[in-house]
Length: 61
Image (cartoon, rainbow, N blue to C red; front, side, top):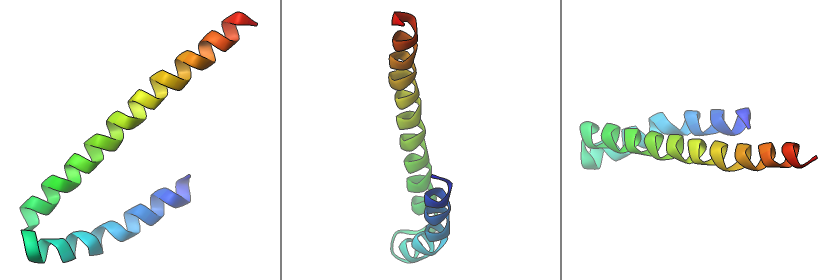
């Protein structure tokens, strides 16, 4: 999982640089922050979904 994160981090600067030539740097940085926010919310939802399921499995044992 860590290596996949590093792959995403390695591709972000060139992708933002290429996109900033067409859309501008401020638009690209704003879009990047929205992507981070989306995945952060997705992780929190996943934690609540899977942790509640794991907690109920432990209680039922």
